[in-house]
Length: 334
Image 1: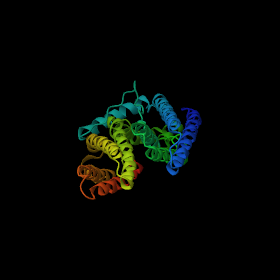
Image 2: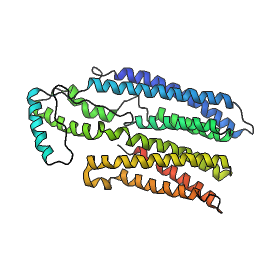
Image 3: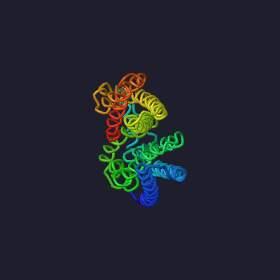
Image 4: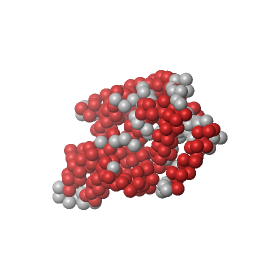
């Protein structure tokens, strides 16, 4: 695919961005460990500046991902010869007559192109951790609490390490997508095989990659995951020591996360009907998301009674359980 797309350039520049990100996060995490262990706080202003730098690097890497997706849009149209295009449209017309959701007819003058969302495959982890970085930065400046800041910094360093070592979106960009489309662009297929491959690629393009719901449903869920991560930090602190300011901040992030999760699930419902039909209910990801939403709702209700005996600690434990459950959610494929 290198002759069609600047994959090597994307990987080179992206890996440099990720290296800077990892180094910045390592400094931030080191200062967090020191401030967590020492009796007096230090480097509070400097770590704030370092956190701002880290979020700026995150934004630069995300802009680079946007650029690469634009290159995919420009360079990878699904073009068919005129005779196959006519045959395809006749077949699509027959298929669409009995289908609840129809496939658009093929336009030879404007062949379909991939409008890939920015949170596919390993990119979703990048987006999730970037959202956490911004929320943690707000938390850093919202409360002048050295140990809370330290934990936020350490967790950011852990996420950056995971991104750098395990789910680097730049090292091998979009491997599942490229493995599926590479035969179309690199192999000299006979007309029959080319038509068959098109009928494999085109529905997934329409109902998955180019689906309008992909631009709303997944990012709202990842924003909710970032909020839940903040809830995890505050819940741990609530178990250790009762501080009202931390409880209020955790509750604010929990309410925002619940709103994002609910809105994301509602927007995912029509997409599920369109992509899977009436059997959408039995998809494992749908069922796990509903379970997560139910536990999230229970957690918010317990926070209303935080002043009751032992309810403070029960709410904190429930927040930690909620956070641990949500970790497995992004690993499920979209």
